[in-house]
Image (cartoon, rainbow, N blue to C red; front, side, top):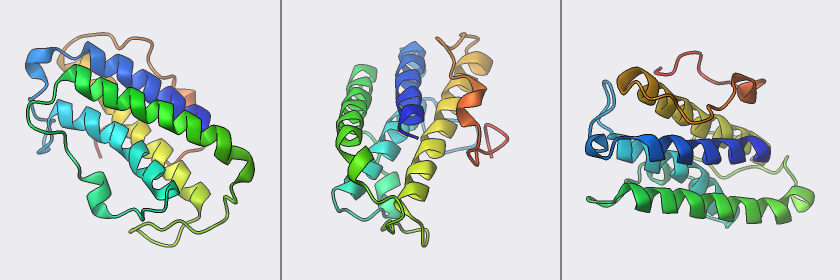
Length: 163
């Protein structure tokens, strides 16, 4: 899962960097979320997991954070790079000493830490797929080194990009 999260964070930074700056405030199709907010949210999904690992329970508010008005693409990308750096550092210490069967403190039910890590992976991954779709279908920009579909093998990814 950690390798996949790294692929998602790395790819998402590439994709978000390709978005036309003039359109970052545009809203997603049928959703009250801008492209800038989608990029922020994607990185925040992994950040919320890291907070959980520091003892902060996951609440719905954990996923509903948005960037401050006027936050620029470089600032969002810097946030993503920081999340990636912190996730990598956490993983180096956690992979050998974590009991993945322990219960996670999340708002959506009784799950293990492994299940929460898996959900973090596919949740961020789904938003990464959305970034790729928007680039290609809305802006006719080929995503820079798309995340290969086999990255999602065995994960309960939604079949469609927009569900």
